[in-house]
Length: 477
Image (cartoon, helix red, strand yellow):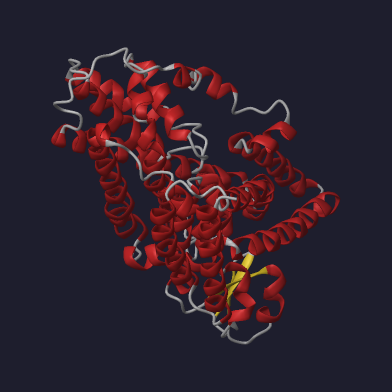
């Protein structure tokens, strides 16, 4: 019996009891999530590596979240597109979403390059190539052509198993476009498809709501496990600690400063209010280190709190788990490259940095939003740029810690992109954003739709200015 590990498990259980008390008292979900995060840090610092009894808790939660992703994306995209009513509207939303996601990553690349060249991480280390094995990294390199081929499904069951988002989105788009074409000719013949997909969506959303309730409890275990396994970096990693600090700085600048400017300029919303509303998604991303796993919470906060119409939220946010990814595909590869160039005294020209920046943007297309993605992205960029994979191998000890901030950046960028697209397509509900109305799903909107003071219909869901009891929204808290 590992008594320190058992004591760690007891500590997590005690915090879980406290969280349950707060939930029963209807304390704000964001506040409870933040408390869970704060409680997990000291537990991890004290437990250090004695976290084997609580580590399965976090893994089980992530597995459950990941199990929700494929069906959630499929029914969400189908529901969103079939509610559009036209292929032209789909084309507008799709192109806008891709543009803003890629722009977000381009800004991340420029930010990382600017910070890297300014602070010069790795300078003075004078390491020699060949001292670190790259065998673990070599298999992570992805050929861009194969990545593009992988966008197109050959076995949808396998895509569901692996949570390959782009193939799932493509299947959903093909089915939805086919429905739109047929509905214009034979509406009664395809009506069961629409009704069935909407019913399936309601059932899956309800199940996802149950999973979201577990988030604060899982965050305690996830945070304690991450902190406990990351407290022994050793003195030889001081240069890497500097790289880690610069990575976190870049991620937080992108998350809150650059995105804040985009929100104010192109979405015309208060950045402070926006960040408060998506805070649960940010914390979940920070602790699970999975953009895909965070997707159910991201879409929930976007529709119910920010006011993004479901047809935007359920299209742009899933797309943002494979395209853009500024934390993993933009900031991390660029900063690791600058660190390695300095640490190994490699001469690098201005033109080479330009090529590196372009590769950072291109590789962001098709990046999977799961833990470890940044290693794959960095290895792919370095292989294409002709940089040693040893850079990536040396930085593995800090990659997990960096991934917390990187994933938060990815999720925030996807949420911001969805909000900007919603504003540009006039599908952002300011009443919901300002807290003057509540988003209500179809099954909850029946009674609200007959209220004389009800809000305007949104197609998939509905807003209402009538007071909503807190218990009615329990599934998203």
